Image 1 (cartoon, rainbow, N blue to C red):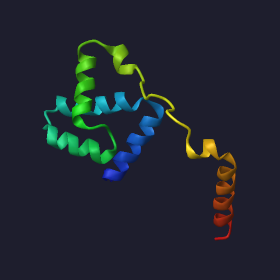
Image 2: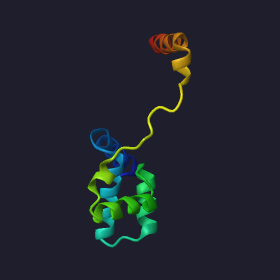
Image 3: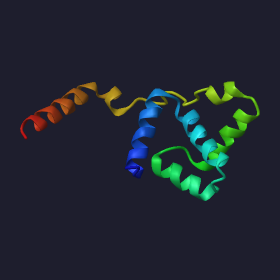
Length: 106
């Protein structure tokens, strides 16, 4: 019932509704509250697709020290360069049509 895949799937669902950083930090803080050791926390979080223990600990410390705004700031960096299909949009359309046609032939 509670396989790694199921836990990872529900984590991904939660990430789609909430910030990855805050969700990972919450999971980490819950494990620390129940006195799990870092090695076990890190292994579990890594398996389910959350951030690593050392990073979650950093964000937990920031939150505990009262810098809520810093925790909530999303600094993903945005778009750094054009993706392949930004440069060649006509290929993207052909690729999508190829996939749709291939699926219809099955």
